[in-house]
Amino acid sequence: MRSLKLDTPKSLSQRVMQRLRQAIIDGEFALGAAISEEMVANSFGVSRTPVREAMNQLQAQGLVVIRPQVGSFVFTPSADDINALCTFRIALEPKAAELSYRHDRDGAVAAISEAIAAMEPAVNAKDNIAYGRADAAFHEALFAHCGNRYLAESYQLASGRVAALRTNLTSPIDVRTRTSFDEHRRLLELFARGEFAAFEELMTTHITNSGVVYAKALKVEALKVEAWGVE
Image (cartoon, rainbow, N blue to C red; front, top):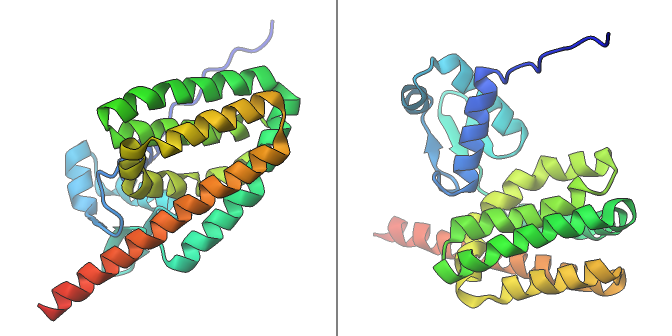
């Protein structure tokens, strides 16, 4: 008889990491905010050891910056970071879409359609967290069905930062304007028909516009800090 093995349960640090990761993505911790290890440990009812391990994992994902003798902070992107991240996405996402179409078109269409179905009520309710999660699911579906684990793993390294920026900066605008929602529906139509030249063009515009929003938000925050310094 084939050997039966139980799945290894997730470690405590892994569970803490996943909860903190979602909290950062959902905006429970603002960009640049300090994260107290003691506060997290008390909140979860655990020692500081698994929290410290979780912070190290989040730092490897680019979501947390650990400053020795100072503390742990949610990442704060620079203009160069945003440009690099958008360039990365523009290079990868159209290719992932093309591979997904060839490898598992029906599965990808189903997953993308599900994400879009979750976007509409979020737009109507002006729920930027729900919209951000659905938006993330849309883009992640392109990699989940592409059949190339190296491509999928490459995106996974940046997906947390993309999702956090989306929820904190673009989703509040997206749930008010519906422009993003309409673009996602159009992307699905192009994907389903295999029209990848048009898909790449629209995806490039979509990601570039997100980068513009990120950059504007950074300037607004910088002006606020400058104003506080003057006061």
